[in-house]
Image (tube, rainbow, N blue to C red; front, side, top):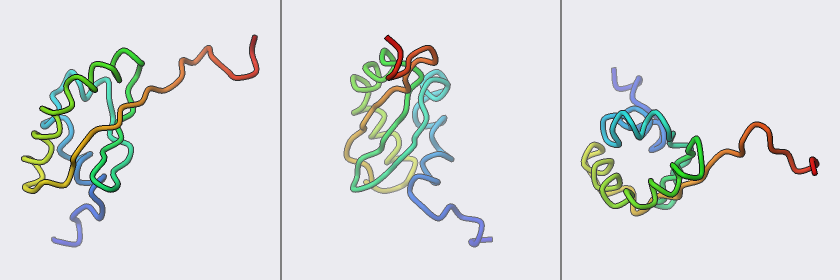
Length: 90
């Protein structure tokens, strides 16, 4: 069954995300990239992105513990633009 194992760090992190980050955080933030020890997390709002910046050390520690090794050094938190916003509207 080893062929069913996730192929990338991001895949593995997405599998353990809710358990490592907590249900409340997981409902508002999704891991969307992992490269060079940096985990990119896309949040539902800028407020959640800022909150995750503050919670980052604990989240990084729990993600690494769930992975069984130190793969992540830091979080990069971003938010998606609100639905009503567009570059062309003024």
